[in-house]
Amino acid sequence: MKDTLYLLAPGFADNDRREFCPECAEMWGVLSYFPAIKEALDICYQPIERPRADLVSRLGERHQNCPTLILADDADAGPQARVREAGGYRFINNARDIAKYFAHRYGTPYPRGS
Image (tube, rainbow, N blue to C red; front, top):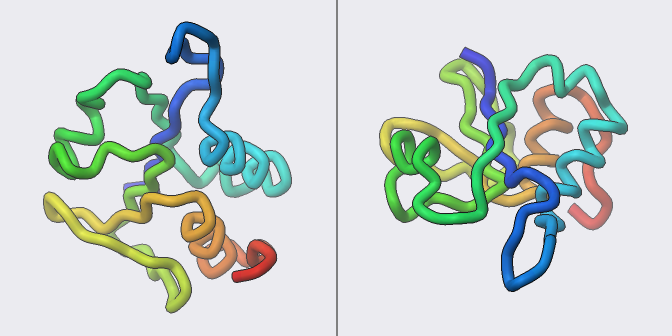
């Protein structure tokens, strides 16, 4: 199993306009800096509307945030990323901690200020 990154698709309609998720865009920035990580992940786009069925089926109703990274069973998250658990999965549900995890697992630089 690969790590699975859940993101909101860019340019969704909300609040009577087109929007994007800044944290999901931050993840795309990290992936564009370090494209080898992208190849190591499964990336799944979620709708802005809730419930987000893919996340709910794995983590439950309370954990629908994007970005969310569900860790592979053998993944060592390291000491700096805040890892949570639900539905039998370990996951990280914010961009900065996902970037810290990438630094630990893939050797990329750590985000500034972490």
